[in-house]
Image (cartoon, rainbow, N blue to C red; front, side, top):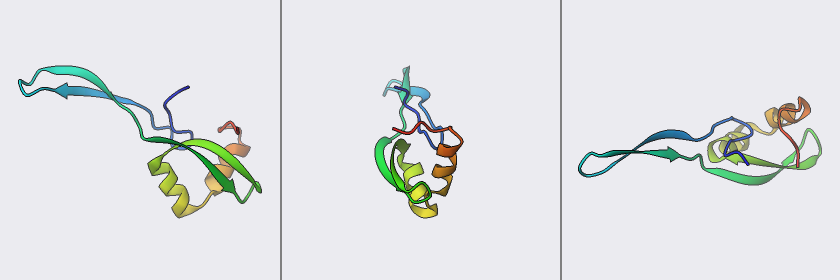
Length: 79
């Protein structure tokens, strides 16, 4: 299962751990993903999606219209 937001497409990025002695080792910064069951008014049903918390805040603010459009265009697989 990919660690990727289904709505915004954000995924892991890479960077460095830096020690006190300034030694650098590779690490991954993972997105804060949450599995959420959301009522989509346009489809008149619940949809379970894996979203980043930023995308979840965007849905709370702007509504589920964009989510419904992506589901109808088959860009998001409905569970």
